[in-house]
Image (cartoon, rainbow, N blue to C red):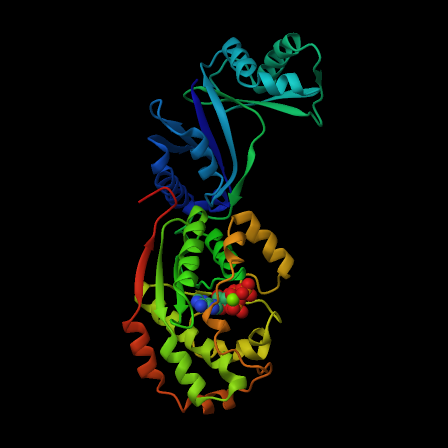
Length: 394
Ligand code: ATP
Ligand code: MG
């Protein structure tokens, strides 16, 4: 069977003059993402991207699954190619969608004809193929408004294509079109979701994780690497920057009031993440903060942590309820890993009564007891960079 995958472009098609660049980025993202599924020809034509297997050993199921996780695509469908001939189209529809045609009670045929040299117009093709299908499956009734099964016929340049209903794509914009951002990835539920949400807007991510051995265990670190790997299904290949945080946490505990511990620690996270952004050319930071979720996520607390960085801080889950975040975490496949019970550096030395409405002046005053620059330099000197490859790829 000459089966292929058709991808419908999403917002990409709205981009006017940039459209070409968007399509090129998207096709190259698709090529990279399908490398481990075999050899495919990928090209775009008329708001559709064609993914055609080259040779018999391609994993079409794997490719189809991967295509549903590529940003910039709104719908994905498998289709069968056939010669551009009205009877060949009917035979193809009957063979390819036999099971669906047997199960449905109502149907219609919908045709798009972009090859205007084809001797019948769309309506005539639909009527012809629909008529023959009706004869072949006498139990079927035609319903042009709400059919149970819509048989799609597309007559295009190279061939005709037949397919059933399409499945939703990942939406969003092709990764790389929106520049690069540094995402702060903890082991929690929220930050994988916020990473996914920003990647969806076409942003390539650099991941930063702070770890505090021996207070946090190697298992906690492995958990974060696992989360990062799970994210690659959506976000593509990424770099994970692992930043040693023990000395900073110990210094804060030794020199600052307990109720300000988390706030000052978060300021260091922002400063260090911004330093990584400068090194990597990233233009924003991303966190999984959510308004009111914990003491360090009140508006006053966010003011205190924002003050130390000049880059915009993107907080895509800021207005979401935990339940909504969890639903997304399940959808993108990170939830089960996020709830593994290893401690994060945020849970080391947590104050009994954290300050919820801090004052900037006070915080700055307390920080004077710390050698901020020295602590930063040593943490940055110890950063370890790991490339997180897509699952199934080296
Ligand atoms: P959850 O509330 O589910 O634990 P979380 O870990 O994302 O999610 P917090 O611990 O409150 O929530 O942290 C807020 C944000 O700070 C995180 O979303 C993440 O972006 C960042 N962050 C926290 N801890 C770390 C860490 N160890 N490394 C990198 N970023 C972190
Ligand atoms: Mg957390």
